[in-house]
Image (tube, rainbow, N blue to C red; front, side):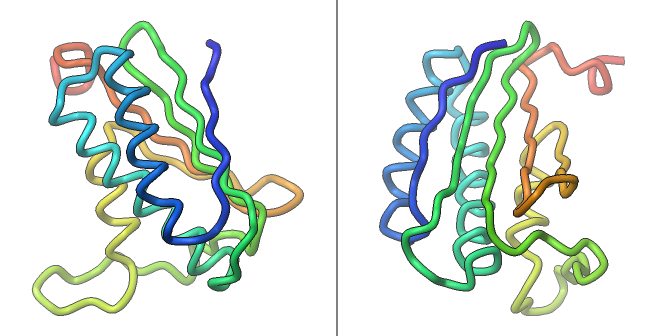
Length: 142
């Protein structure tokens, strides 16, 4: 499974370039506009979290985003090399209230068919999102 990768730096001005590149990558891989938009939002949220939390708002640090095709869809990795995500500190937002924190991860998790993270690394966090082509999600077609 070969991946195409974009490296951006930890500035919010880079997010538009990321979303544009990702849209093109997903389009060539045959994802419909709904799936492309959902993944652009999800990946944008993860990159924003990397800027805010992993790098503490400091500019100039790398965020790697890769997209790879699978037989049944695509796999996207969003990787930073800053402060790792601490799942013990994360609380799913209460959607009946105005939330200050936690909404980005909640959104990213809901927009992907599979969502996970890897902390077993020297530094940072690697997020993985899987999106199935329409009609190929084994859990949804059963």
